[in-house]
Image (cartoon, rainbow, N blue to C red; front, top):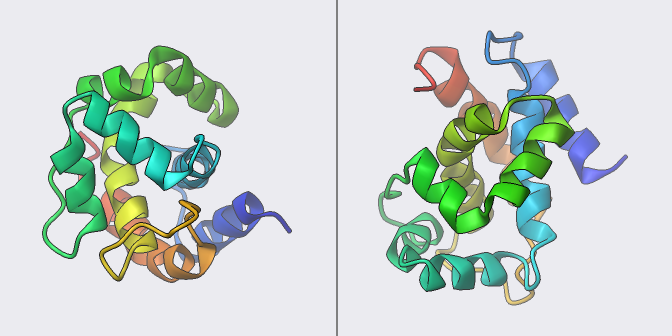
Length: 147
């Protein structure tokens, strides 16, 4: 079973469907996106630094509070093609994906870096993220608004 299948199965088994359908796929796509960056998380950090948001992504990696990122800012950092690709993969509109991804990506990165440091190879390991996803989905899609 692939990492994406594992993530989707975990979320499907621990949460009821939500009106924001596709959140399971979005979390999986976020991890896949990070891991497929040149350099993985380290490459994403570099992209954020070049775009003037290095402090934001460092807050996600570090042990302090995660700084928020706006949907438009995230789309500018990642690029429209990347956001459109994620949207197509999970069956949502790019503007929906930008908004949801701006909420999901900080939690995914944070869960994958519990020691406050990016992995040397930049790959987000599933062992840390898998343990946190049930709470992540509940907090993001359970009782809170996605906007």
